[in-house]
Image (cartoon, rainbow, N blue to C red; front, top):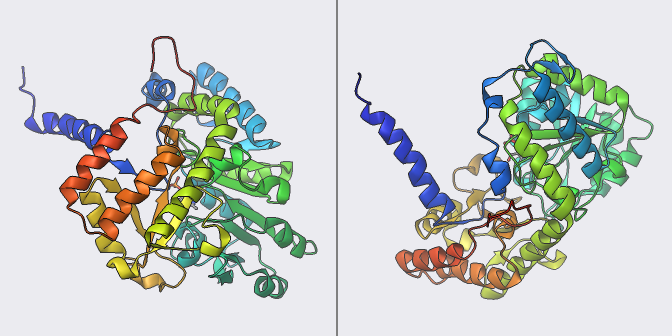
Length: 422
Ligand SMILES: Cc1ncc(COP(=O)(O)O)c(C=O)c1O
């Protein structure tokens, strides 16, 4: 019998080390991540990962799809219920792909669209160097008010009338306050323009009714990742009310852009939808409250938190201008050495080209909220951040404090528990 290659053992060891380090020893403040509940996680490894089910529920190109049909019927029903959406497309395997499907369905190469610039919060997929560019779209910038950290409507409305875009993409990756969807929809009332709202970051807050409801406010398509504030498996959901739009989007997904839609994520997604129906409101409320508290704590400690006059945030994120603390790159690395994981981020004052060392740090509290932290712990988290960013405390010392704090919050909350669990 062949001996086991040492690299095989190395691979197993890498996975173990990741579990030990990221899951057990670090404070995760990356705004785009989250953790599955134990039940959802236990179902992610199943035979569905080995299978195909091209096509629509009940009309597959492959045999053997009986149980995936059952599962996806549940996913679609629960998504419609949770988001009060007439139509749901569940087969986009990522948020970026759901944006591509939106552009593919609702525009043609050469069309004009509007989106924020990246330093003002856009995801790369909205821009000419990302998915929008791959579709051959011409991207115009949505004007942004740096003080309010929101769209500058007074400047934007006349631009809409002039350009008559095919699509306006709202939402974003740096996303502190609800966007003025209603007013923008109204400004498009005599145009063919479709409103696309990228709720990748805030999908869990929308589910918990703690952010704006973009569909009700007039968005034609809402796209969103299922693994950021929505604490499910990696993937995406697309929400729509109009049947005509849904049909186009659905065809853009299959046969347009997706063949295998990664069936292994469907059971954990269904579980997370059930969890959000039951616990979503409390979870979203606690998340936003934690973010506001953390904003105030680090502001009081002397860090430059953006949107101070607006109460820092109404989402799961806060953003800190860290030019005076050594810049984005150095700060993010120093925090990592102390066991605090966060990402450097472009902020509105930055040029898009300084992506390697931007002026901002984006922090998200959705995962630590999921793990049970509340306002009291936000005080501690703020102190830990300041001990590295302001006080230059020894990293080893901070790392020990981080470990101690996270060891008390090692069990996902806002989820069902089977007997004997947790
Ligand atoms: C606003 C926004 N849209 C889309 C995406 C892409 O999502 P995914 O990573 O699921 O492709 C992101 C990623 O973080 C994002 O921030």
